[in-house]
Image (tube, rainbow, N blue to C red; front, side):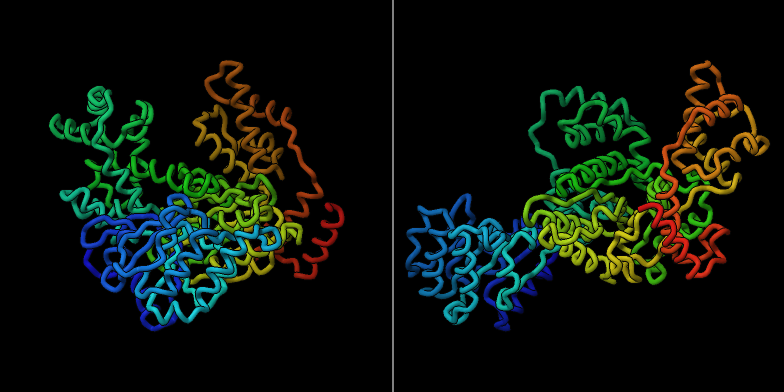
Length: 609
């Protein structure tokens, strides 16, 4: 990397020189390395040695755990002695105010600012917390701060954890510090692995999207202190690898360092073909053979890191199946295949901002979404329920997730049961629900995300979703899912189930349509799969090599699907009403007018609710 300032640092510098602000909040990736002049430095080191050193005579850092520290001190500075013995904000903030008002060219860096002025219910805040907020808020209104050429920089990872009174202050500038981009990641990997081919560097830079530089370094440059079992681990890895002996030995020694702390099963999973398949989706796979184990390790570590960073509130989806494993739903697969092709070819204008999958439970919405992720080649994450009972935590959780999503890029965000996470909650949550939905709507409608971040929200009760969340520009396409009502489609589902579970049949499904598919009409895809697996169990108990017709008939007779007919009818009509296109509806609904559909929906609602 060259000596140019990062964009966020340029923004801070320009705002300060123009006199727009003397107090700044740096939010986001503030506890990471920066690669500056080809050297890794912390953000604090960058502020001290690059951004502030020439213009400041005194530089002070403070956090509530370690207290105050002078990185640079003017010989004529007055009023700083108390900082060396006190750590509490109530003790040190008045001292900082005195220093700032009586001295020139002072920089104050407040680490973990959310611990000093946290987001809180003002009516429940302690006297000390209120005093801290008022003190720091008043600094922005003080003429002595600007006139003395002093600057205050607050650091926080999550902006929503800071007190709103500071965030709403127009004299305090908020600047986002982004996760490292592809160029920065590539430069770091090149620094750690100077001999790595350019094509592999490009792949690794793409694979590490969403990770911090400090995390990438930890993966690719482990500790030099080797454990006692290093020799046995090298020998074990050597036996697993393929290629000539010299190459295998060199790769085994390198990989042994990277896999410290992992057991043999975990190492084997990374080196085995199934582990390498996760990186084989790239068109440059033919050049990565010597590095595929490292790429597999990056995938594993990235998954662990991102799920941990988001407090277990997201899950990276294993893309184990594509549309070939999806039975039926031919119209849906055609629409989604077209979207996937546009995503891969970079036709961003033709990619929707988001998709809404609607339909009764058991129609395969989640399974199809995961298959679509595989078809698109994008990383897919599943958003779990991030609502928290603690004040401010829900907003903080969402902000953390969105930051990670933005950093990953080329990502599909799958939200199952969206009505539970983003449905109407009334006023019982103190307004948290409305703030969360407002933030999500803002993020989903950001046009810079088109073609890079695609939301797929699934629900069987779209009537519970915020209406504005479903509008064009957020969830552009509404794709309805229905139970199979044609024997041929049921047979397609059965074939897919038998194929992915490696179950062989001794009979032809189509020739026995009246005995099998016709009896499964209106069954959900989940029910159809359950029947198929039950037939396989029956065959196994009878020690049959293949599933026979009698086994299927017995399974159909034994299986009792649990269902509320009135509620399922209501959910089906909701899916009809939400659909973006009549072409995606079953024939029985395609010719109905809106008035007729509304009447049907009203009658179904009266029976279901």
